[in-house]
Length: 508
Image 1: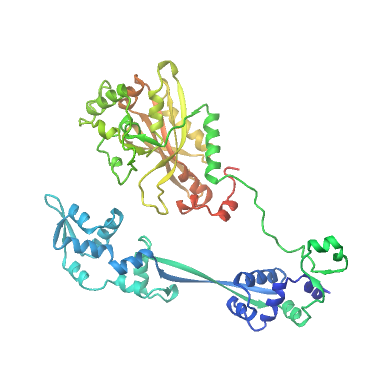
Image 2: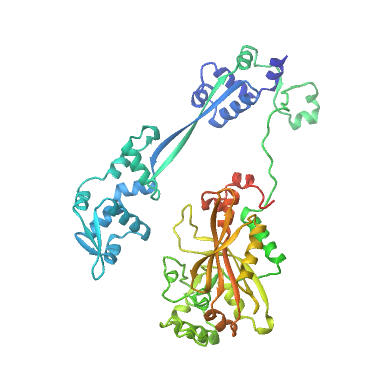
């Protein structure tokens, strides 16, 4: 009876695949024998496996293949060889950078490779000078071991020799030179039930697989023999609609600060360097001002500045103004302050809040959750756009212990019981500290943001009075990484529907 029941439940694809399993086991073999598509064979095998008719086994085979940068380097030369060629015997560092034609990232990697291979020597004379060593001259004359390795690819990971493994380990640390390709192989084996099934008659006379509108209309379905439903078979999970995990987290975090009495602030993503940097007492020679760290706008290149506040901020930078500080003691360029950029941090909004208040508006507590932009090389650890959570407390009675209290309360609602502040340095706060929480699973402290008390050189030019302002800035994705077990920051925004469906709700 069981065999007869099974036969009635078989899908047409299962009926075609079953006979082939007497002589075939691999998916490709079954495809050829049945003339079915790969996806059709896999469906049939999965259904048969659910019915205990076949046993499926899956094996993974790893192959090392050449990636797009590897192809380009074989054709045009590795960055380290280009750098060696540009150095000749001895070259100033800046000239080597321009002559090599390499990107900043490629140049730094190439420099590290050549130092490791003892191909160059770096010395400081009047300038930093790169000198080619004998090993470097040999390297230029022959094909490197990396090039030889790439020409042998693709190659099974299990076939790599010890010296090839070392080369692969070095190359995989570099960007898109080699890649690991995982091929999955599925094989099927008939069970005793499957063999009994094959020996029976798989073709049931007059069986129909689908009900048509015509049958319903003329009533002919009443005497038909339909394929039986298998109500015991597992079915795909149904996922209801839900917000993106980052949107969920933003809403949850927004509620935390509002419940603590904070007022949310919003601002534009394009600001002048004045509001993003100068007003926050970031010096004009700070590394963050460089093109390799910040996205500057080409059109419109410059914005307008608030005249009265500019005078006070300029004085604070140059000589401390009325703050009692000596400032940075450097020149200050209004032209530099006018440059438009994509905001590099959310703290600019705290500065704008201060500039819009007077003494009668105090005390004041505000927060913001904003997307910010950095000119970063995209990899597992870095994004060029991400979210920051920041806020300030402006109160003449506020102190450093209050700052720790606010942060402890926030992180407690984020699932962390232990919070500590570790001394650090930021241009616009003093004291400054990094925020660390204790991870109960990893049994270690992890850093999740920065905080401190705004300096008088920032507060007084904007607010007009010197009053304590507690401030903090946190990385949203950094907090979410551990909660979702994400190892690669790019996974947040790759829009993998399957991944998004399966992610748990934030803090539920």
